[in-house]
Image (cartoon, rainbow, N blue to C red; front, side, top):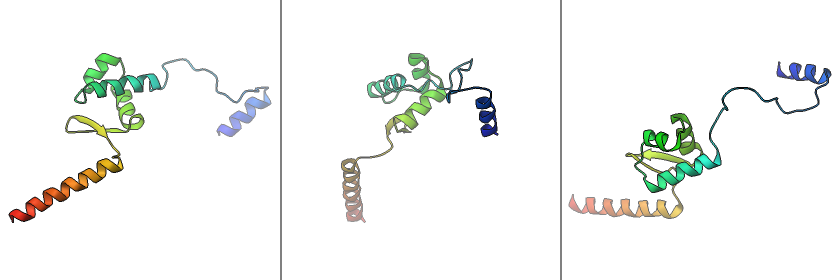
Length: 109
C-alpha cells in the first residue's frame, strides 16, 4: 500500500524522499543530551528512583526506562542500576569469589 501511495505522489510531481513535517509532539525525547543527563544522575546516585529522575529531568517514565535499558544498557538490581553486560575482568572476579565461597561451604559439610 505504501509503494502505491509513493508512486502516486511522484507521479503528481513530488521529488523528495523525506516525509513532510507532521504536527504534534515528537515521538521521543531520547536524545544523546538526555541520555548523558540520566547517566550522570545514575553515577551520582545509583539508588535514584524514576520519580526523582522525572522531577530532575522533566522526562517521562517511558523515556527514562528506554534510556536506561536500551541506550545505557543498564538493568535495576536490588534498587540499584548496574551494567547488564559484565567485562571479562568482572566476570572472572565473580567466578573466583563463587569458587572461594563454594570451597568454604564444602569445608563445613
